[in-house]
Length: 257
Length: 314
Image (cartoon, rainbow over all chains, first blue to last red; front, side, top):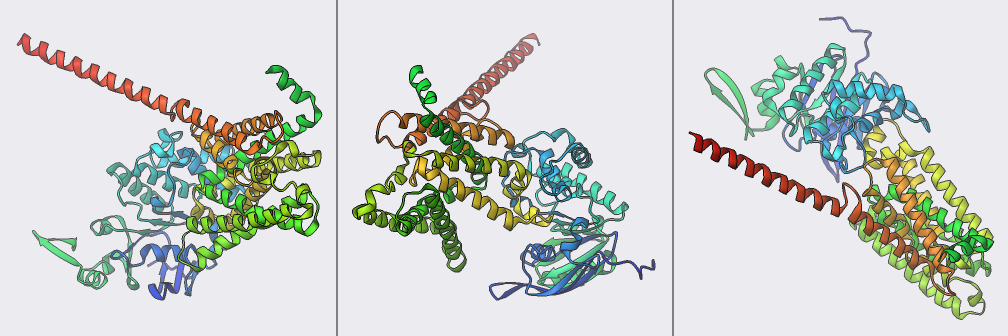
């Protein structure tokens, strides 16, 4: 085990509770993310996964608890965080192209009044290339498929050159090419020492794609490395009997009911 | 016709009015593009209809006809209306569209009652307030025109300086918040600019119809381009043409209200855009569809022929 006593954790969440109209949607959640790992946040529908993510980013108010990003508040550490939201949050008929959307990721760095220039354009083209969308740079976003739109969002987050990334269901409803591109990208981010927290819905791919896992069902059931935490017992506890483990030829498969 | 146009330009009075209304149309088109893309077009109408009581109260307090005073009255009333809409949506289950409808009609009703009262009172006929319903560009004096021109310059400059910020908060306000843009502040700025455009526009186009200057040129512009800066330019152009038409026609005779003419011009441009714009226009789509069908039929015919030939050669 590497000695990390002086390193500040990318994300420490303490006692976060989020409620809508008196009902707790996320209840007393605390965990610390290890640096340089790919972490999956999983749980049944309505477990509060997206809400937890949004609470960490301050997009949704929490009624208790605190969040520390690299030891400080999100406001101060914004430049080290990248966020890929769910695709439905945007009007895709807006008059703009893929390259323009990615360059919007640099607006925080540009400041007021300054227009994006050569440097921003090159950076944006670079990240579009990384997600395999370089040929679509000038394509209107309304003409992109769901998976392509997802990859543009991903590129927009990458162009922020962050150290900690949050992704909300990046694999939901995407085509095989996009899925491959996202996996490749996650691998690259990990090799570069970045930390990624992904709200993930597909249990069958957790062990293959991720190092760490957070099991959430309103409360945090467990958190830890995939080997020790992604177990049938803990999964049963998280999914509350909505899960069946099917055994065939000695290999187990998870089936959501 | 040409003589008439030349006479408009040579008469210094009409020249100024023409320039003022043209610039007003330009500025409204530009800021209206953003409200259009944010799907907040009804807000412009709410601001306009709510301005009426503001203008009336400004007159009742000072008993003098003054465009700048009325402008302030319209601004204050507009901001009050927006507060009411926010309060309704926040404290009740009523959604913003109905809230705006309620506030818009209520304020306008109150304003109409006030207007009737003023017109029956002694100083009423000099108030010029009835012109504020449908606009009367010909009634403007030089200082009024200066206000119009100043407002238009403000709108265009603000849109240019804050272009990328306005673009981002219109496209993805959640992301904007995430990267640290003061989204609330920017949205308020956009609202203030829209209110100013409306408040300045009501003397030329009138309370009832000024919303059209915000919406119609922007809607027309969307048909011509997929790039936002170009869309703003087209919206400004269409707005300017509409404003100019309204001002020009209103000089033809006493009592022709500017508002309806401006709206007719803007709508004509919209219909032409809808029909004729390359790419998104209806004509273009119909032609493309027809060509596609013809191509498909031809290639189907060809492959059927090939298959037949191939079969007969066996």
